[in-house]
Length: 113
Length: 112
Image (cartoon, rainbow over all chains, first blue to last red; front, side, top):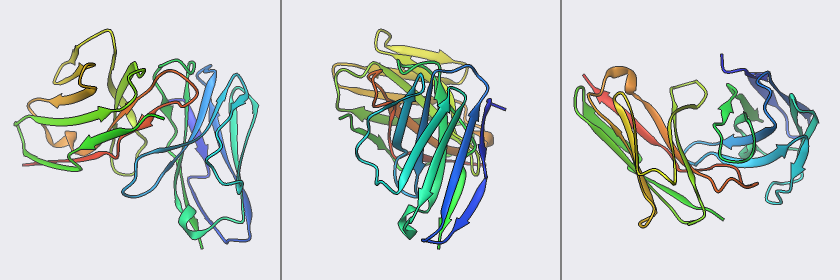
């Protein structure tokens, strides 16, 4: 157990639904991340939080909305997704932004129907 | 931003042989290069990393080499075993807000 827990493990949602992914870390880390893992593509960084402050990332569609209420929790709110958003969503944390090991959660397998 | 290329996409080796996976990066400011192993249905896990002030690092059967001038780094696995079968990802980071930039991954298959 790496100390990074994601729920749910699997999620099927319709294009009009609203759902949230949850990530929790018990490692005392200051940085948390959301990554998207699709088949045949590299892991794509979506959002970065450092000390609960979001580091700007403008390349993610607004149908994905992150929230970091405290240093241990990270959410990804989903609404009006598209079928191409189906992927494995991985949360990770690290001690800081500066080149330290990223610990990954087991991911949420999302299917948009 | 950083761009990381990884080759090959699939690598099949006989058990006991060595495997080498190569990555190149574009941003000369990158100074941290981790390698992750992801088994089927599991999370990526760090297996070894190297920082830009070091040219080579070893941990038992695994080694990583870094050539800063050429901007490439490689993962070497010796005496491969069936449990080495997995997808391996290289990554690079400048330590800033961009986090880790990953390569596309190499599916390593160990043939018995």
